[in-house]
Image (cartoon, rainbow, N blue to C red; front, top):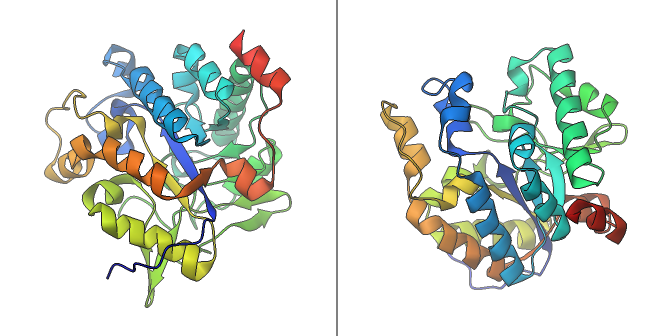
Length: 296
């Protein structure tokens, strides 16, 4: 199955969804939102480790950051920007877009965008819905994104999944509203199905060689830049174990956590990477003035 032909050095988009282990949607039945402040928060130490990995490999990435996290760790937001990464929005409180009406989504987007821009000192143009929660039943969410000043979304996963997915949607970036791109998480087309190929639990579950082959195929066969994602808690095997969760959630959340950091480091070396806004919008890195203000 593995193809020895080297992939062309297209730049792929590396993205990190900045949330903590207790904020994962699958944990919602077990950890009340009201109890989040009582949980041991490990996101700062894990993002700092990611920033070091990126610095070691000279990669710039996009950090889709929760407003809830930014509010509590403002210096972390400033470090992300100061090191040349793109600051983007993951909403404020990790509420699925599919669980909100238009007014509530607008409030969530506006609150998160304003907070991130104030702390980071840069314009925030990108958004990723928690749990890829824009689908055929809430396509109106794209209207709200456009109206709130976003220029791209990465909120659709074109696969069939029990929690999310829109398998019939385009596999690569497309203009979903005038001036607004949807940049789906990348899949590989096999027969009549799209296969997940770009991060999350699949990257932890599958052998590294398969993930490498899938990404290489997108670059080589489709001639497209891939979009990869992971979470800070996925490089943290020592995170607190949530008690009482069902077997499926336990497996999905904890599988191969001890191996993930090394796999990410290898992935960063094996492919060329960049920020979402640079690759898909042609934007340059944050201006020095903006970075300087973020450091102050």
